[in-house]
Image (cartoon, rainbow, N blue to C red; front, side, top):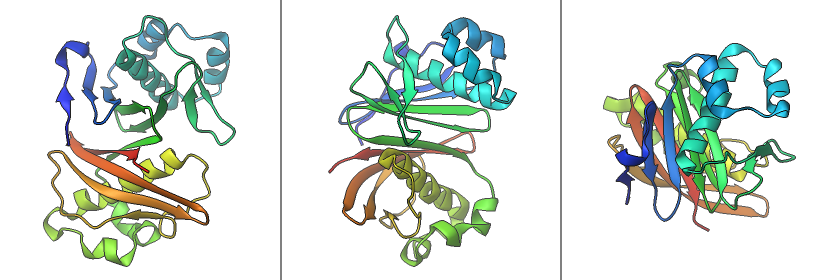
Length: 224
């Protein structure tokens, strides 16, 4: 995978900002700031203020961190307007780039690219082992590394979540419609392949994953 760290584009407290191949960007924000910081930096619209009034504190922080992260990634002076389509998939109203957000624990993550994309960040939690049969196929479970079982399992979960978001129209069964090709784990930074197959839909994705402070981030890029 051809990736490049861009420290000169990373004003603190952005945890990660990378260009991704063939085109696009990913970012992670480690949320340590109070709500007032995001209010000041985002300059929320009246519609956004109204929306956030009905959102609990933790979700407000995640929502605002994700949007500030996306804005910082863009390098633009003016923040792009982020809306949702009829299926709830976020999009930028003034950009051809597809976008996706994710949150877990103290992290918010975002991806933007000129093709269908999705991202997931997930803390390593044992509960995934209990629900593995709900989202894993037999051939997927057979390839799991016994020495890094939870990490490997979490990559599968994140990959399927990312493809679900990239598909964007909901109503997908993680076992029946979303597939990850079996792969050997390498959490430094590695990739694998995945598919969404449902009725007349067949989408192929490049999947990229990496480990960040006890969290796995996976993003999916549509290839065909």
